[in-house]
Image (spheres, rainbow, N blue to C red):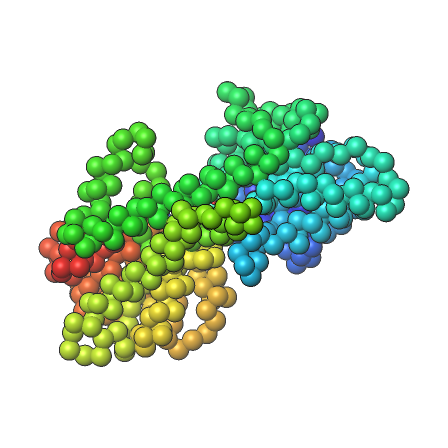
Length: 449
Ligand code: UDX
């Protein structure tokens, strides 16, 4: 089928490449000329495992094109995806200006029947707004063309996005019209062979499904961070508690890892946006507000542990200390630092007069962009280079390569021989046996050490 994909961010680029991979003819549109030029030369603007070869191969095969020319892409397409950003407004609601700008462009140029698909995460009721904007443009130019607007939210995880897209666990199609469902079922048929993964529903339910999924996952994380904080105070170890509850299939093993708080482009924004939607419709979202508040507090927790450790010493606390920081991306296998817990931590360390030597396997370019040049930041080439001259180590992102360092080497490198483990990667006993002091998240000993 012929597809136009508006937006070449994470969602648009991955979805476009995967649709091309199964044989569809995809034209990706973006207003960013430099990005489009780069993509046409095979330069992938984000780090996502498996994406570069997928884009390059399908581009070379002529099934995946990149352009800034919206009109041509619309003329080409039977299915038009809107996959542009919905950044948070000042009050936390999703800013729809980019989505509606695409809708306007579609309204101006569409002159044959097509299905318009909202892929961006958008508040309930957005499909109606998109439909209204297109209809407005149609009436302005006297166009009479049949079109449907469908909600088809994405559930891609950064770092696993290509696999999630090629092997989705569900395909949500929210449509008020059976014709549109038939078109999308045809489009997704190659991803839907072994069992029917399509869940059909009305448009508003589909829009809410996306928020409900992310809010549920964020809730699990904030819940575990809350229990971790209790564990810390009562002298229990959250890692043992986690093992103890995960085996109950009603609870499950996923998303029950306490840590430095959730970040990324989705959870913080979506929890807030859903809370705003609830409030706008007269419901006080008590649980969502708590999920958000717990997460905000959790992002400052590592620093609290660090401060508490150093305030007990004789010198000036954290001031003048140098910290090695392992991991800057909001999670492993991505270079994304949006709403990353590392950003809060570094700001707190700098504010307190400390210096940072940081390393991340993929996010160094992003870190340079986010932090700029500063005297109190050294971006290092390797995890061990970050340790040189450092007093303590802070692990913020659980990259695989940080999982089993040589603890003896760590002790020798670190002036104060202390490790703050923001992801509970290490066994406290093993690390202490190597002569290092250990602090984790929700591990009773962190408070009593
Ligand atoms: C998320 C959803 O998983 C995905 O379905 C949706 O389409 C977009 O949002 P993503 O933002 O890529 O995907 O990240 P995810 O892997 O879900 O992790 C989000 C955050 O939660 C990360 O900061 C991660 O470190 C944190 N997390 C996750 C925890 O702190 N504990 C956990 O147990 C799991």
